[in-house]
Length: 353
Image (tube, rainbow, N blue to C red):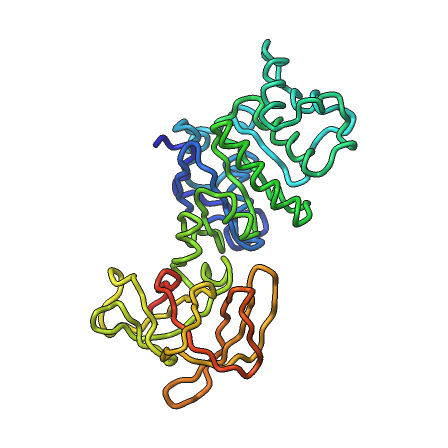
């Protein structure tokens, strides 16, 4: 598949800062994919977006859009010439213009009226052409901003924390709506987000960043089920971190709480000491199991029951309580002793000890 965006060894340090915002960053984004740059504040994700857009200039490295150089030695293409559509966090709509005028702003081709109608239809806003921005809901304003970004048929659409100003219900709805619109337009979308749920719900691929570098890149399922280091395990969802030793057949890890299955046998060796990430979703209650513990706390949160289970090692010494997600219909009380199994599909080796 063709490459929509490529960064090669890109670095950026802001004036007055000792540490680089982005360090030696290399990544490829395929055409037509929806990708999220995910990470905490200060991780470099917004700087990466601004470098792609041309709002910032790298000190080192090369940036390509549609395989054409945008930034490299002796080459600099300004933002307005990069064929990029931008959706800002606050949408940056013009309050004195109506919906149609906002979408068509800056569009000077002869087919302006036809193109505005096409994107209005794409975002399901036919009939709203003459409405002023302050008469629209937050979700409708977001669709206007997206329509404006798509109007010029850009190579790439960049979206900076597009859901941060929406309430929970509207956010869930707009994730699906924005994804539908981008796919219908066959557009390459790059999101910036610190919200793991946004990233998991909307992305074809997630790029997890921290301290200006990529920590892991992969599908939402891959990132969630098989984080490759402790930072990703803890930042993307909840995770239990457990130390253990690889057994002979490499399909089991011997830990202080019992044997834990692992299907990453291709990256480990017999006798190796490893740190495992075990997702809370990977537990199933089982009566006859060597993995047993006592409930020390629980919370009902609607979609599941979040249970803290105090486990014991072979000498009945207490271990750090595990976080376990159970079906919301399960009934547990503090003090209950539970047995359970762990699915290897939610176990990942995150570190050599």
